[in-house]
Image 1 (cartoon, rainbow, N blue to C red):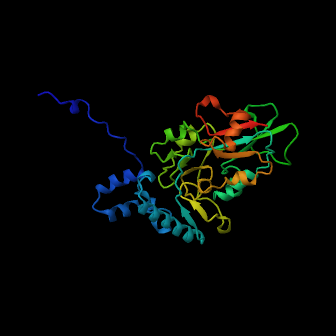
Image 2 (image 1 turned 60 degrees about the vertical axis):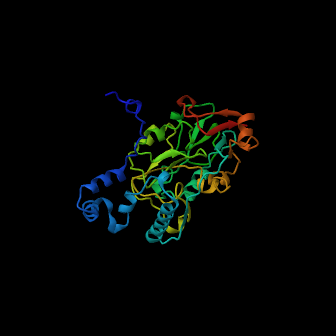
Image 3 (image 1 turned 45 degrees about the horizontal axis):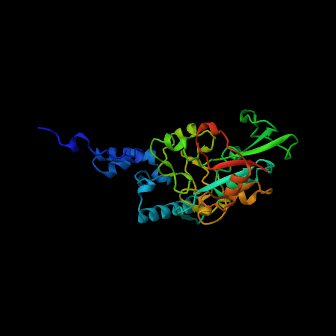
Length: 319
């Protein structure tokens, strides 16, 4: 019997997301019931300490969540913040707007290396405040280089003293929100992806902490939480976004999101607002009259590690 054309050329099935939730669902099917699964996994779940719940582990991927699912998750995270820190927070899931593609530009002529951007970023995004994390966990690394030098390997991230120093220039480096992002390709469970407005995000409830994305990023723009972040209740920013500055757990990779909980509401990123020299420019690439497009069309623009082929949305320029 001759096979029909549909047998010869079956419709390809989309790739299936794999992660700890899928694994646990499969494991649960081999057990007598869900109670047996909870008992077997109790050391991992740490249910009695409230660190993670079975519901967290079996949560759908962000892109598959319905409005009711998301509201339930947001309320759960708000309750956890209240329980763990005694802080009342509001966690939102602001969606991207049509007709917007965010981009950033930074003037190497104006930056004085004061690091106010890095500290504002930490405060806005609820990053760990342990003394050892002060620079390491910030999404923004400010590099000090000799004027005329372009070799980042010879830069100093840990410079001290007054700035700017004579004969030096300063280059803040953060996530470049690449159009062809190697980090999203490296993630084995699709926990990180690019949103329609160009922001590369991470679902911290889906991340398995493998750190492949860190190895793939040419800009060293991702941070791994080796321990539960150290942050005092009074330092917590209660205005949070699910894909941006909500409190992250131990064992996940986090990153800059252009403060999407702010920028999707029409505000500037926190780092831009505190810059004392006006070195930072942020805007919409799809708006021909935006300030970011003026920079790209009228200034000497430099793309960091352009040969990596990532096509970033973060640009440097000279006045």
